[in-house]
Image (cartoon, rainbow, N blue to C red; front, side):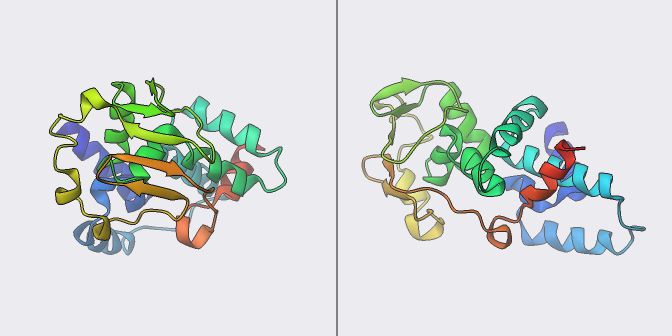
Length: 201
């Protein structure tokens, strides 16, 4: 219960999108009412820090992990697109985007517990970077788990937003990375350029 409460406090500060549990209409209404009571806007540093924290909590990263991703992405031709690709192509995120985990946290745990294979090889590293052509699957030994039994019935495809860069086979509990995630600030809801501003201070 304490963990849930702390998540709601963080989400009130950073926005509902940072946690799956706070992406509800009830929370959004509560947040809208509370924003009316807040004071002046944040400084440039405060704005940069806020956005950096939003990205970090959204993807469940440590400070060091996000810093390393940002440093590497900054060297690319399009840093924001590169950072988005790095974050979305993590093994745990691909599992989550495929619909085989209900939350990002559940996806991280599933990978850590060895429930996932990549190209037939069992992995336990949520941060493993996948690429176009990679195939993920729920490991045979984990398919009998209540987490995956009857998953298609409990979580039908039409109720999920499977990204276009993934080809998912619900019946076989597998998916293939057929493309790359594209970054659109409006769709993603995260401003990576502000994150780069924070780290370039």
